[in-house]
Amino acid sequence: MSNVAEHKAKKRKHAAPAVAEEPSSKRSKTEKAKDKSKSKDKSRDRAKGKGRAAPASQFRVVEASLLLSIAPVFANNLRAGAEEMLDSMLMRYVPALQGVVLAHHDLRFLDSKATIKADCPFANCTVNFQATVWSPYVGQKLVGKVNLCSPDHVSLLVHRTFNVSIPRHHIPTDNWEFEYGPAENDPEFGAEDAAEGAEDAEKPEETTESSGRWVHKLTGDKLGGKDGRLEFTVIGLTIANQMLSLIGSIQADPFSPEHAPDHSVQTTAPKKPKQRTAPEPKPPVEVLEILDEDADSDEDTFQALGRLGDEAIAREAARKAEEQAKSEKKRKRKEAKESVQDAEDEGQTEKKKKKKKTS
Image (tube, rainbow, N blue to C red; front, side):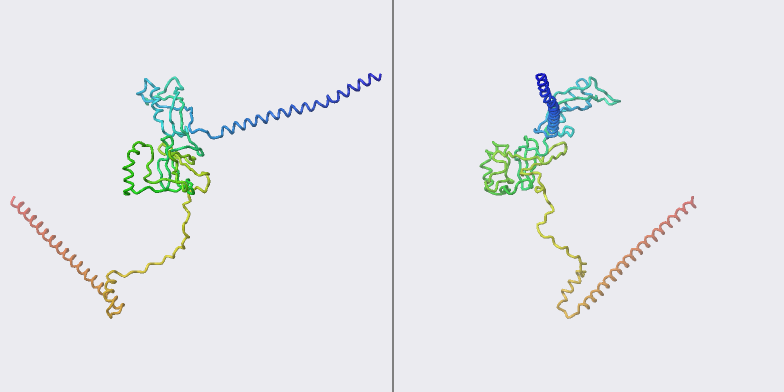
């Protein structure tokens, strides 16, 4: 009996930890499920983050669909007409593609038939194609070649095609300064041109520095180095006449508000506005001349002014009398002409009456 009781007790002792281990196994499963869900969420967040990030390259290949109206001259070869219309989009900025179209390929028609609407002879068809697009974005770093330097900006060419302008307030003037070129009538400058004419002919790509250049204050090196290549950050896009040009910056922090141009800065303290007063009336020129002539005489100023006033009144009266005399002469001439005309008219009427009587 004692052996049976000990055996049962051993069974109960072994069973107790087995029951206690069950909930621990359940917790581990739930924790594993939570870990899996967390890892999935993290992977989704990473995927979303990758989708929102800006493209790393300035060139993209885009698949696009377009409805074309092909001219009837291409009725026998619609593909040639579609390719010619796509060629007209090259090197132009297309807002739908958000970039400049550089090339297109893999042209295919989405419909087997083209439609002609009403009396319009153009064939309407939808095409699909792959387009290679130059699409720089704000904040991207590019490299261009210095083309022109001036005190206000630096002009660059990207891929020898696209224009870039770096304004003065986006050039670190603490380290760089503008050095003006020689004058056109400088004899030394003319001699240098004659001596270096052959070298300039061999290097047509190098920019002329007659207008000046940006140089480092300490080392004296020109901006862009020997080859003229300069790295900049895109801070703006300018689209005009389907052409894309860039605005760049070579500042360490190009988007800092410190580099924004401030046109409201005053170099001197503002002056208080003066109170406007009515201008003093100036006497006529004739009066001034007469007063200057009679300055040494003993006549009083008021008497001189009174005399001048009387003389002016007399001149005005004489002018009016002359005008009246002229008008009177004109009136008399007019009356004399009218009287002569009336006499002639009366003579003609009398002649007509005599003719009637004789007839």
